[in-house]
Amino acid sequence: MAAAAPAEPCYLGWDFSTQQLKVIAVDEQLRVIYEDNVNFDKDLPEFGTQGGVYVHSDRLTVTSPVLMWIKALHVILDKMKSSGFNFSRVRALSGAGQQHGSVYWKEGAKVLLQNTSPDLPLHQSLKSCFSVSNSPVWMDSSTNAQCCSLEKAVGGAQKLADITGSCAYERFTGNQIAKIYSQNPEVYAQTERISLISSFAASLFLGAYAPIDYSDGSGMNLLQFREKVWSPVCLNACAPGLGEKLDYPVPSSKILGSISSYYIRRYGFNSECKVIAFTGDNPASLAGMRLEEGDIAISLGTSDTLFLWIKDPKPALEGHILCSPVDSQAYMALLCYKNGSWMREKIRDELASGSWEEFSKALLSTPVGNDGNVGFYFDVMEIIPKAVGIHRFNAHNNRIPTFPKEVEIRALIEGQFMAKRIHAEKLGYKILPTTRILATGGASYNKEVLQVLSDVFSAPVYTIDTANSACLGSAYRAIHGLVAETNASLNDVVKLAPGPKLVATPAAGVAQVYQALLKRYMGLEQQVLNKPK
Image 1 (cartoon, helix red, strand yellow):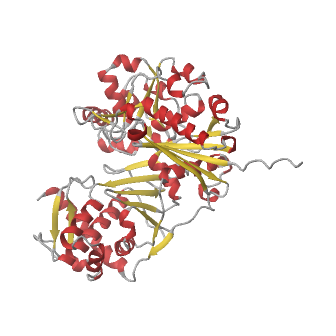
Image 2: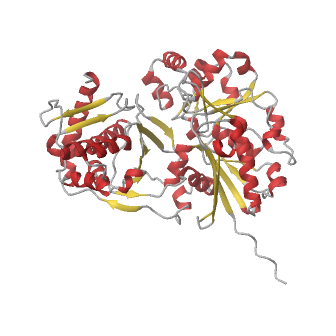
Image 3: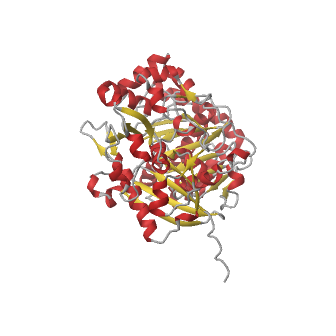
């Protein structure tokens, strides 16, 4: 009787996001063979979270219970086991965590982590391991005093951005650690290791403290993003002895070790299964979208987000420069705009009877460049630039109170995309002949909007299905991590994955129109900032 063929290898990608824990398994052909999630509010109601978090009475402090994340892992692994998932097939795994959240391991936790019993659920074994039971997460904005102190210590906001890739942000981990140290020095003293959510999750699989990776680590206001080492001045400004509690950061593609015996004995994982460094959800999404040099990914959702692949970054007081999660010689920039689809839908409802078809017809009826009419549309205080209100200018740079319907619609769309190009270039982004724009999110279904995007950036626009992009990117990174030391690129490893679809190319002659308009837009933006309406 012939021996049974060995099971085909597969790879797991995890995403410890704000509202749920997600997992994807892909096979050697990069086909998704398993997908599942645990919703924190619905599936773990005993923790009493709303949207996966606790919003505290001051409305500024926002946290999540650490044990909820560990129990979610227990629940999802048990679901996989019950479904018959063959864990012995898993050759490698990696994952992502919501960026900027931090976890505080109590003295003695290392020993408990290394000696978990396969007879007990992980959350029971680790329940006494944390000096801070509710972790600060990315929604927290309670550290303004610590941000001011950090910027002062290094010589100002721009100096901090030059060192760490970002000026001080309230959600960033260095400032959160500084708050814990200043308010609860005894809790800080009892903490033997501080993890990001990503490295905390990797630690659960390793059965040992996992180091922070370069990419997620560059969103802490602590890492010298060019040298990829902790900044002594930033560490000292936040808390004493902080470097020892963080340990050394590592490349994002590093094999951290083999999976803990806990998972081998409880679930049947192969003892050779490798754990690749976990990273932040935004870097993992960049991997999931398979960006290459010069590319832009733009998510056109309620808010708009840009991921940029950059070789020569120029840190500014706006946006963020992070180490690339897939190329040690490159960087990713991140820009976020609050007034995205929220504003597009508001104008559609007011001027196009709530119809995208009518909205698109208005766009098509107006010329590229909108006869020099420019608008700024900020229903809520924008992040970049920090301005609010609606500001309209005619071709002579004079403020005017209203535009005709068609002019208003084009001014909105052109203005949103010109702002994105201008601020991307301020961070060092350069449009190359090979540049692609990968669009996702609700507005990416509107071809007329995407045509304006293509024209403004002078680059082709593709659409890409990015459902669970951080999870998928983590699975891709698991595969890449096994061969990264051979200098194979992530895109070499995942070339079998389905590619993006071309939907728009720049119209002839538009580059010259926008070249002049972009310069005007920059000047008018300063006018909006200096003279708010």
